[in-house]
Image (cartoon, rainbow, N blue to C red; front, top):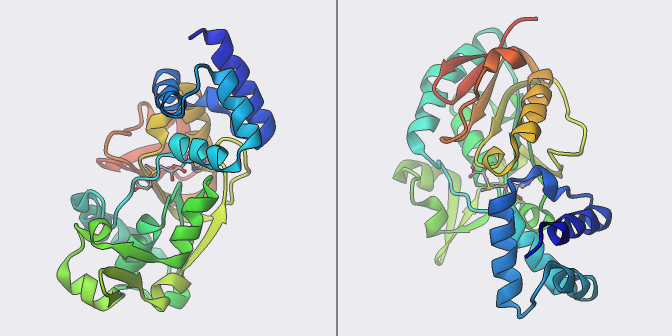
Length: 260
Ligand SMILES: C[S@@+](CC[C@H](N)C(=O)[O-])C[C@H]1O[C@@H](n2cnc3c(N)ncnc32)[C@H](O)[C@@H]1O
């Protein structure tokens, strides 16, 4: 498979969707997309794109394959304990309400996890959680707030009982939790970033991006944080040279915006 061909595919996808695949790590992305098109019986990116233009369902499958929506409630539960026990008390010291962003929230497990944790300390009226993702299908699932047991495997029993309604095999997030979260489509690589956040949670997406794209995103996150606000990243996503972005590590995977 010629690189030139992939480059042309990237160009066409960008024109059609605004999504810039060149900012995602090439080897991984190519491998995922080639395995999809081969499964569908195509022989090249060119054939694949032509078919995608005609077939809405194939286009949706392409988006699904490139976005990787895997998520679960309390993913890496130890990290959420650190958030609750070491980070939140500091954030709430000076403020009675919190503005939080779950960036690349996938199907909603992450922002709902945040809402559940924060609700132990603040009334819902004082918690504003923006949850964004590039993938509209994932956001639809997130808004519905209905999950299978598999998404809840890390959730402690008392939390399952307090924050979910069980219907057969399905768990529905209670309305009070849903109301704390606003879902919105947002492309981290192209759209403007809101500001004034006390906490930004962005986990398990930056690993897919090139170094250059990551640097730009860190810079933008830093600008979006209030002084002393905190960025919480995924378990393989430590930031090299956080001081370049006016950030300092305060716990593993947590970075605080340095007062400017
Ligand atoms: C593996 S999921 C991470 C979900 C959640 N943060 C977690 O850690 O469980 C990665 C998400 O990143 C989203 N994503 C990929 N590229 C994106 C972009 N350019 N802007 C915003 N979201 C993006 C995908 O749609 C997917 O839902």
